[in-house]
Length: 188
Image (tube, rainbow, N blue to C red):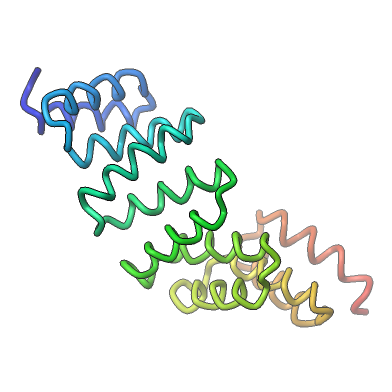
């Protein structure tokens, strides 16, 4: 085998190109040579998640986190695998860790808000979506989700404003278009 760094570089190239079996084989070779290679563990877990083997993904990514608990992407990918397994509380903890490590991580804040909204925690979800918009004011889905919260609270004018803002930012955002169409007859 080439040096571990060269093998990792080649594996990542295969991974990015969608050649997952080739990448997986190289990650496994790296781990045979260096069982605690944090990047190989994480990326092998990411492949497992990509192919729907989320329990395996959780195991590998958790091992990577145990070796290096300061990498934002590890927690984000672990959260995705946990969400796929329906482990919402654990996924929320991972997203909280992402935000602790990077308070401006708009995607993690948004995903956390979506998770909270799905759990019926509208106030907490609203806080996350507002944080997203402080970091990235043009995050269309965050506007749409704020609109959903406002709609559920019965504030249709505020909901419409959020849906309209989402559509202005991203005219292809079908959820916002459907949501706006659903309340327009009731606000006129």
